[in-house]
Length: 588
Image (tube, rainbow, N blue to C red; front, side, top):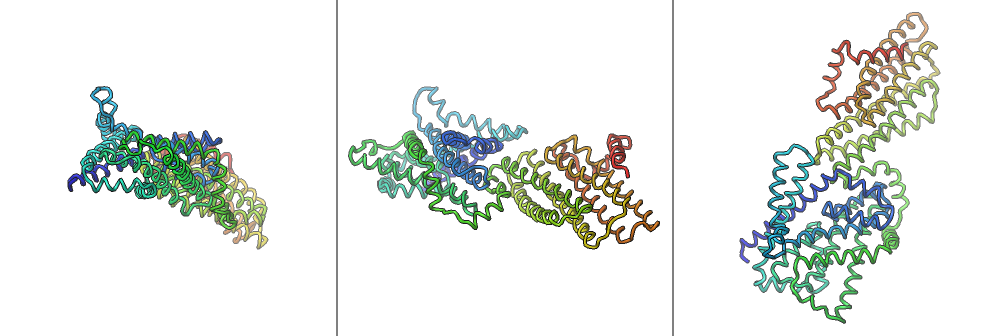
């Protein structure tokens, strides 16, 4: 093997790894978060969890991705640790499908139909179709399918390139001696674990081993411990994803490691004891790609069948290794509301966006509660209600920081056009919701000041303020509901509502000025009323922004200033009919 053969082998390896990454990424994007929702909702029995874990992993071609996803689910509280164990076991089985696909490269026959199922025969056709989809089709889903097809073709081309480069090594004594060393089970186990830990993909490392088999120098005695080691090495990704996560999420990653370590230990103990007694002849024979796939599948299926009944014991063992910590438990409980914003979900943007959306909807409900509490305090002051309002305000501020940061990270991912618009709606929405809550705090401060000084509005001013307050409560309630349900028709009604509230504010100030002139109200209370109505008007402005965000979700050409300007110009439009109806409803 000369220098150029080595370059060919490295190039083939690079294409193989890139193809596998492209294939997995395309499959995840095409799933659009659906596979994650299936995992989330259908793990009520261990066997069902195993089947789901195997199925999802077979689709996305990565046990590491599935396990990391599960760690994220456990961390966010979506999935219990007991449910996660079955999925983790199933993921180990599902990942073996890749090795069977790769074993097709070793098919040799003169039959046209047999040669047709060989990947090197049909992958060029898939590549052509994929390139056409990527370059000439605008539909996002078909472009994702194109990425999957091209990724598969690149993977197979890389596999063939590696295999061809490996064949001359059969005449190299140094290379042959290397695999004689790996026939030592402990060294082979370590080599397989190290390789898989480095490239963080058991499917890829098994594929590399299958390519090495083309040299004819790899015996089953050498391949067997390497395959077992690869199952341990793949745990590194999940263990890394558990860093910084909650204690239960770390236990999920630990269960993955324990399952594979115990499975490998039991398998090796039984196998080598039997070999000492029976002497398996096949161990001395050269390994081939199909044989590697068979061993890989056989081990994972056997380990799952043997250890699944002891899933509860694995769970208890993880609690022994990572004992409960009262301080961390209290902190996890406090942070549980934000656990859905798990960075592991960023690898599946559609699902991450769904998780973020659910957090923003909770934020919206908190903001609406604060407006309601603040306005209630103007007419009947309650110190306990104000304390709860202040607590919610701190929580809302944290929502803005955490959700905003998460959305910025998510925006760097490869999103569809619809998902990008949804992300923008949420990003602007959290800012408006936070400002609505800020204005509620301002109103609560004014209520506190009035309560402390013992001052009150006149009876007439109080009646007018109650009507104005009801209008603002209604626009907040409707805007939050429209934002949550993404109601397009409802969103179009908010701008005339906001304009009516602007008119109500002007009318309130005009009437209060008249009362001041007649000496029916003090100048100090006039300033308080002005501050209250200014905050009311600002809250309505932010409600309008929430509605415009929903409009932009459906009508990407809609922009805030252009939208409001066009409404103002349409003198006889439906807008003005709605505007008049709101004035009539809240007329003061």
